[in-house]
Length: 366
Ligand code: FNR
Image 1 (cartoon, rainbow, N blue to C red):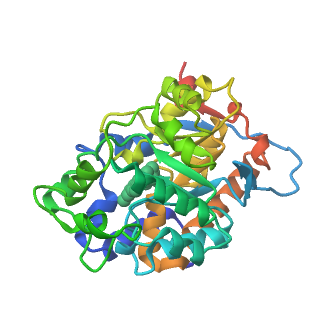
Image 2 (cartoon, rainbow, N blue to C red):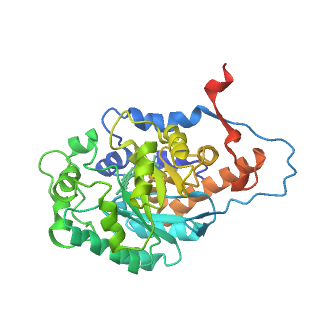
């Protein structure tokens, strides 16, 4: 895996290896994919302002997330159906997170079950991403299983009343290949994913089974079934962040779902400052994902107030290229880039990274 020295190289290799339907599903953003490009572009508009001669003795990337120590401020966001990328799918991905000492988030619609992942990576800090099904007993059961299996948080996805319109999936009539299954379910909750019908089979599955009537009041219900902390995943507005906290959520993940829901929404790094500002009087952690492909991207998000940063697609690219070893390579590329960035910027620990370390390019032109 050593020949890959950037996340971009892993992506390029993965793109050539993956079958068309899986590749299109992993890569796509919503409709014209403007936000998909913006998630990346917005990072390039931020400038890091290094401090010189700080008397370095090394650097320490460690941080804590919801009280758990992680080896660096980069973890893995949930992505569905990972066995399309590699036969070991979620198990390989979780094992890589365990080996690298960071967080693995398992999707509700995974091709390995909660229990299989827990067994494969018992020491990883694992979070469970929750979609709320119309059938609340089904949903409750998922949460209880995750809690029993030692998962440390529920990442409740709040940006998905329905799945976004991804044109490639519509064209491909995307469904999960027959030899794979949605491993957290039995019967029609698992089988329905194989029915294509009109357009994307995945979107049809979601429209049939997920509860689009959800409101902030439903957090009460979720809190009544679990003691695990709840991370509201998919927040893009300050007022929604406050609503999430008032409803009982414990942390905020600023995310636009990898630009896969609604095109034209802000890049996540653009939305972050509004949310940090809105929650400044509440004692909650804020995280970010979306378009992060380098150590300097992670650094910029930390400087703007994120406590932890996550990646979705980069883990899929690593997985497709080399299973567990590929995901570990992806994480170690980020680790190396972070070590360089922390030291050359003159901020050897996470707590040294203050908001003045980054400025928008426009503020240099005035
Ligand atoms: C996702 N994402 C996602 N989110 C979620 O809450 N549940 C899920 O099952 C999935 N599935 C999923 C599949 C694929 C193929 C992608 C690319 C994304 C969104 C994901 O958690 C995360 O927010 C984004 O992937 C972050 O953006 P990057 O890192 O992919 O740019």
